[in-house]
Image (cartoon, rainbow, N blue to C red; front, side):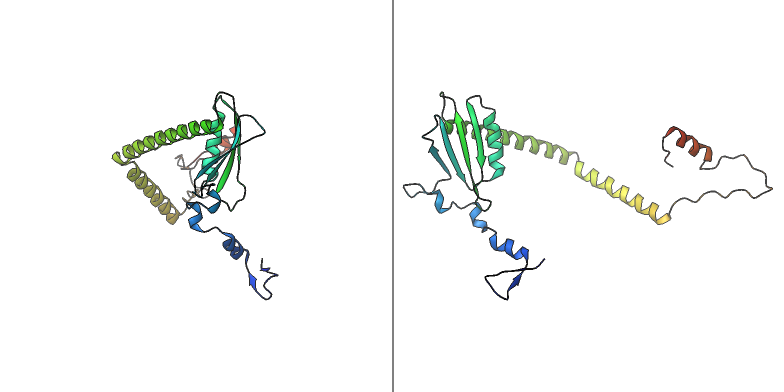
Length: 204
């Protein structure tokens, strides 16, 4: 559909142009915004705000990250026995940051629990990366990718050859008056009737 912008009379643009105009600049993905500056004027990626109404509860604001970090961090914190509540939200889809609200027991603080979970996630990611690299080297050593590609090309070539030849022709039936030689034809009609009776399928 075509959308006419009321603020610009006579100008017609597509919805795709509207999306491009609202798209954040690439530098916003890794450059800290002005909102990340503290009272001292220094921009920091992580900010912690203590909740004054609820005990052992606080808000962790993390900039230049999205659901990719927020959701695994939330799941990891739920495994911590000292964490009573944890949840996150993205204030706006065009803002590359999220708010993490954490409530813990009296034996620890929300900031300490967040640090422990981040450290555990880093260790798990390192272990997963090392396991993947070992498996990739083993497959390369055994020419796993090369053999897979060769097999796929061979199967594709055979399929193209079968399509070029066409389906197999049915054997000619003997004319009336001719004696049946008694040889079994490549496709036996009795075989098809038995297959239909028991519900199975026969592949030629």
